[in-house]
Image (cartoon, rainbow, N blue to C red; front, side, top):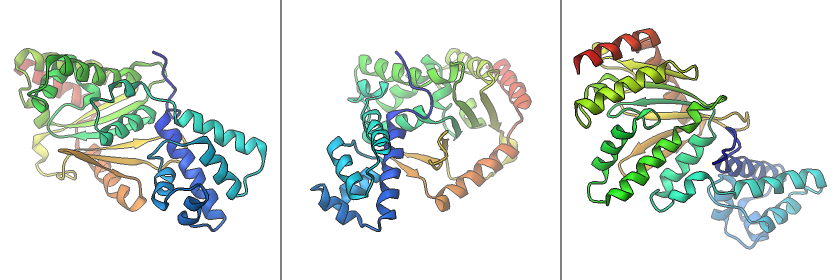
Length: 288
């Protein structure tokens, strides 16, 4: 399956197009209510469009561009082409029956990011899980679903990892709490395979792996797991993703992002160096 280069996925295109429409509206000094009335829609729909959380109709965008005074043919063509790109389904849409809306958004953002920084407490991060480890974790979360559905969920998780092995793959910087590595998920054989996989992944040039060891006691991210996604387009802010039991928070305002950036920097300072990570993982392998 062909894949777009980082930063060109439909989710990011929606966000970029929405941001452009918001900028054009604000430059004209128009309210969302006025813009909504112009395209026979509500103020809340304009808000969702500007946040990139809905699809775009070409006619709506054409009418908004006219309202905002964008009459240059080249500029209009560029933005309308973005409509087509924003509405192109990503590879994960074939798993739409398995994905709640709040997580489908994350998969799209993850696909488009060029740098993912993540801290995980309970499990090995999904982008670094083996097939067997992922199946065990997913079965834990969905104990009553058929085996065929579990396999589809596992395959989707494995497909999310594809970018990491591409020539110009995205960067992943993961900090894993030692507790996640010592928790016997699936038994001895599965954990040995998982630890060995982490050792191999840590040798890849685009992956940085650190471990927050027990010996540090309390640390900067006692609040729990989170991820920070960064995109190649300078117009896009970082997005912090905090997953909850049946939902997630997406933070993109500077005042909300900064505490997580600070916590992540502190985690990286206090965690093992890449060389120390290799030593710790090797020791864990000998213990299993």
